Image 1 (cartoon, rainbow, N blue to C red):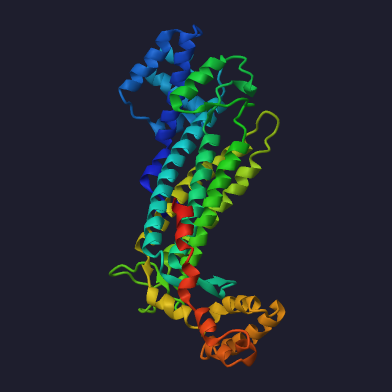
Image 2 (tube, rainbow, N blue to C red; image 1 turned 90 degrees about the horizontal axis):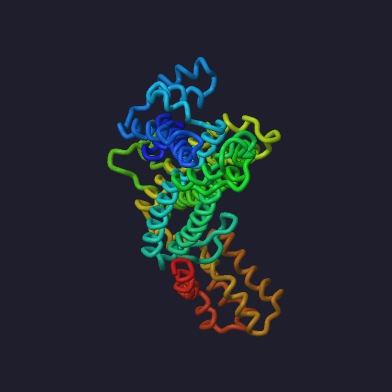
Length: 436
């Protein structure tokens, strides 16, 4: 985790003290249920919760010092708690294995991280919707292969982003549900030494579902799906970032990142205004996607378990969620403050002498009785003259001067095919589909 790209609420989930607090809750809830079942004295859970009620500071350094000797993090934690609570602490961890604590804790952390990410997505969606409504009918050029295609509106570009992130949100809701499972099933998952009712109790208290069947670990296909979902969200972030970066290019300059007072773009060139935020988002998206592959590789563990997944998850759990949290917040800021230049959009739209209307002329010629092959030839031969003139010539003027074209279409009919508003007649319908 790089502090530069981290926000406090998400980072707090992954702090050692936060992790140990979840460990304690799992152990105390399990001991509580074991007391109800008569496996351990009820006084054991009471002693644990009484100590917890004092809101003790978790001494991370002391636990680390014990682990330096035991070479086992859960044992080190249990030893430290026993030193604080006293004799009753010996009843903790009855019939449990370390993975019961570690995997259930990771489920809690990922569920809490998901809640922050879902809130991030809600804020991003709100910003995109506001800007989409603002530019619902702002004409701009649509591009395919980076080349002028046909007119769209800037609002439609943003509506597409809204729909994409709405799908991202749905996937994250599903991924959260997938990951939020509890396993308190003991060594190799048979419940031989711990009653399944303990698992049910802990799951209820922590807001998790019971894992239907575990080995010694929760199956890692769940985690693979979770991190793959984060990777898809990162891909959507980058798609919007790349669009903004292209629109900010000097020769395009239809939109650009907000440039604050006192901001500097280059150490050498005082005139520069660079798309640094969206370039940064592209880099962060690459890292978030990179975490999906090791999560997929973690699925294939040896037999009932090995720990090859453990070191991986110590990296990717915090890093992927912290980075995505930051990226979503950054993109929200970019969209919220994005500088949009409708005049430049219109200038670029008109730059190529009306070529963007070529399809309408093609279709009109076919409807007037010209074969599609001949219609395409007639429009293309005039369009190429405009293309080669770099927009200095007018497609409409050339078509009016083409006898083969005017034999099928009048000048008035040709002029009607160059009406920009024609392309926007279904904008309301599309917005209704996206926003309801």
